[in-house]
Image 1: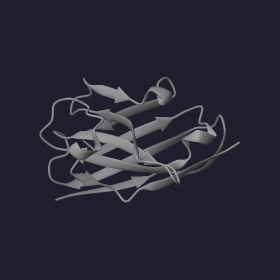
Image 2 (image 1 turned 120 degrees about the horizontal axis):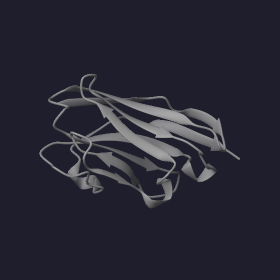
Image 3 (image 1 turned 120 degrees about the vertical axis):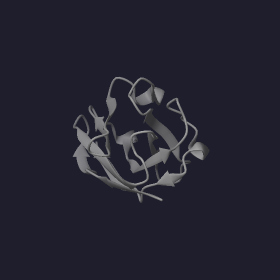
Image 4 (image 1 turned 45 degrees about the vertical axis):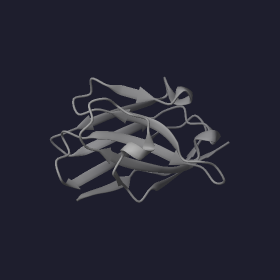
Length: 125
């Protein structure tokens, strides 16, 4: 069993920054692909970013490339999402997810077996 707990969300003005953290406990974190997804009100959940176990495979949603940076610290069992130049359209509940047994940073939600409870990010215009 894997438990994922997100933190770092909140309210920020457009152009501002936030850093989300996801602390993992339970089964081995260092071998898992870790991903971030988000869901805005009335919209489908969408992939934001993912990173494989050693950081050699990283994937981003096209609209966040150059603004968001994913990273991980396997010693702390934590994955991060640094979000810069935030826009109102980034407003959503952000979810951390974990996928075991994969090599690449998959954007497919159905490959992630464990999910956090989600954290709200609100960007005001």
